[in-house]
Image 1 (cartoon, helix red, strand yellow):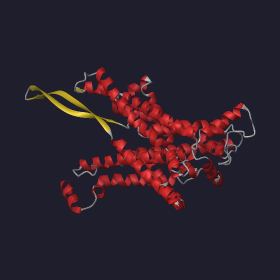
Image 2 (cartoon, rainbow, N blue to C red):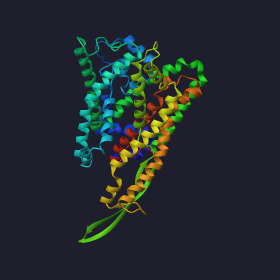
Image 3 (cartoon, rainbow, N blue to C red):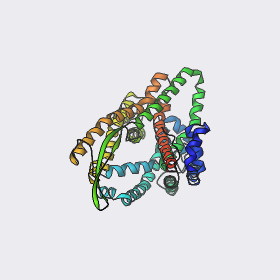
Length: 455
């Protein structure tokens, strides 16, 4: 029955992707994985609408109107920050913890040793990541509520009544932060369940679901701008071009040929066998991480400066605070220039960190593999390093271009660039997660002798 599926598909006349979904739903265990994933995402959306106590809805809406950068943080919470729900932090603390652990792994000897111990080492590192997520979520929750209050130009506690350490509000503050931290850990647990029992990477799919739910509001904004039809069509065309470029660069890779020589015992004798394969080095192996790094770093100075603004003062401190608050805003040319260079810098940094953790040259040598024309060991490592640096230039410049597209689109279309600050980042996440989920579904179908749908 399974082996007749390709013939059935050829005669059905349906698109390959649609037929692949129908084939997947016919398989009991694969159908369970798909429905389980969809069910967990629905549960996540319910949690995104459960607010923490004491939220002032009017003040919360005014804070988002006053500070467009809050939209970037709202991206990783799946819209929960705009509702100030228990899931307002999203999975961002977990992503931050993962980045910290990845950066520390090649530096800390004990973590480096764990990373080389196979599944056990990966489980321990993942456990450390979960432990680190808890204090990061607690601190980020406190910082985000202060950021919301700072966006209004008022003291902390303007968005949530009874918030602050000191007096009778301390217990209420701890309760609110504990609820937000628990919401983050709940989402991380749900993401782990999706990864284990569903289809795709659970953490990425939670972010994906949050972005998709913002589409109706985006379409509503475009509808309100229908009197500027040419600018809207130009903006949509730029979006389609971005999607094409993201797919092109995400799939682009340099294939390094590798040959293996091995000995096989057969009939009491030893025979030498050779095989060949390749190492796929991706042009954009860093994904969306450099954009997260860059935007997170640039969010910090204006956030801190907002607490020291004093329009009626001419002191040096007030002038410095005014400079950071205004020069590092999404309407500043300096801001977008800094974004471009930081994204390029972090792309190289993250790519080289991950590349060094993989120990490709050492693993090749252990398994009897070698690159034709290159001696094993250190020469192979140096060769692969030169190749990865060359191709990373293309990925770094591409990500830098993607990061500043909202500003360029604002200049070309005449629409406000600040309102589309997360557009390119959202598209990068959407396309990347969609491609990864499609590959996993493709692999599950091919395991069951169904014809794939990715050409």
